[in-house]
Image 1 (tube, rainbow, N blue to C red):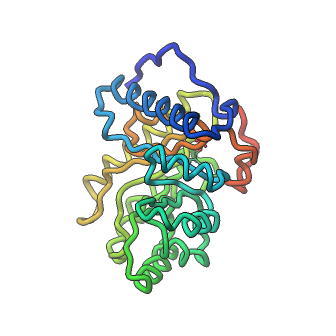
Image 2: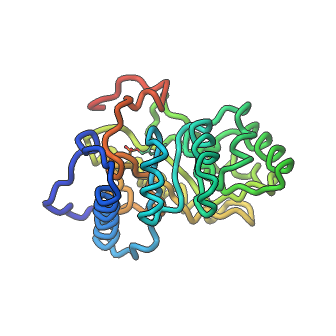
Image 3: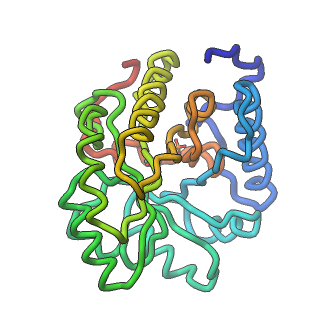
Length: 268
Ligand SMILES: *Cc1c(COP(=O)(O)O)cnc(C)c1O
C-alpha cells in the first residue's frame, strides 16, 4: 500500500501555533480528523476504525477543559504523575478518561491502577504482575497495549518484535489486564519510507499474533502514529493515533524530556 500523498502540506508539528481558544482547538481537531479520514479513504479503510487520542502532556488544565468542551472524552499523557494530577483536578468531568502512553516505573504502577482507563506501554512481565496486584486492590481492570520497539533504536522502550509472541503467552495470568493490541513509536526521521517500514513491521506482527496468541487476548488495536507520521500509520493499519502538537500546538519542552534516553537521532 503506497498511495500518493495529497499535495496540501499541513504544518509541521514543531511549527503549529499554540491553540488557546475553543475555536482554535476545534479547528485543529477538525483538521486532524479530516486528515485521518483522508488517509483512511486513500487505502480503502473506514475512517471510523481509527480513534484519535489527543495527547495532552504539558498542556494545562484550562485548555484541557476547552477540548473537553469540544467533545474530547479520552486524553493521552506520557507521564503518570502529570496524568494523575490532571485527572484529580478534572474529576468533576466524570466521563473524561485517561490513557497513560509513556514508560512506567513499577513503583508508580499503583497510580495507573487507580485512575487510568488504558495503559499503552506494557513490555515486561514484572510490570504486568505489579499492575495486576494493584488493580486487584483497587478492584479495577485496565485496557493494555504491548509496546513494541519497531525501529530497533536502543533508546526506545518496548519489546523487539521477535520477543512479543513469547511475551504475550504470559499475559493470560493477569486477568485484570485487558489486552487490546500493540503500540509503537516509529523511527524519528523525515525519511517517511523508513518510518513506514516500522508500521509495516507492526502490522505483520499483529497478523502473526492474531493467529498464535492465547485465547482471550485481542490484537485488534494498533496504536501508532503521532503528529509527524499519523497519516502513514493509518495507511498501514493504525486503529489509534496519538496526536499532541497538531491539536494543541508545538511543545516547548524537547521530546528528550519525554524519552529521556533518546539520543540525537535527527535525520536518522
Ligand atoms: C507526546 C507523545 C505523542 C504525541 O506526539 P506529538 O508529536 O505531540 O503528536 C505520542 N505518543 C507518545 C508516547 C508521546 O509521548
